[in-house]
Image (tube, rainbow, N blue to C red; front, side):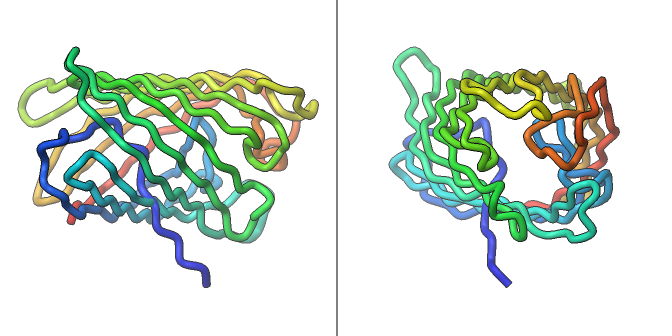
Length: 231
């Protein structure tokens, strides 16, 4: 069985003065929703995150999760491996650039790579990702996302996400050329765990995961519960 190490694409960075460190987490989510699409057929998924931050601003990491597409009886692993470099600018912004590799086992035909760049200030992050071969469909894509968090008090935080996926080259008729997705959640820490409840939504079901939704379109939303144990 192929090993897959990866990490969620994090918004924050601790700065060039931080000491090199290895961190990670294990999580269970009620639905693995990624860019507005369920990659676990609406079911639960265990996940693993690992990240190594270098003292000079570079980092490497990985994320692994169970995935299962609708209509496919087999489940497998989605993984994301990445490396990048972050630096704090004189303006106070943090610039983060890097390369990610997305893989699926089984389902290697979906594998693709992205380059990304982001700017972060305090609790707000804007990120742009570009792929020359999104989901192995021989089509160029760009994904723009905005993420933010806000402390509400009593140890509870509000998390917001908005994303826009656009294809920059022709795609097949079963793939929506432009898609919006969003997510709003509340999170807190208790007994060494991070707990979150979120509502994820997307503009349309039709996506590059072709057989997952066929030619269907229309709005979709799902409630996602997660429990994360950092280590």
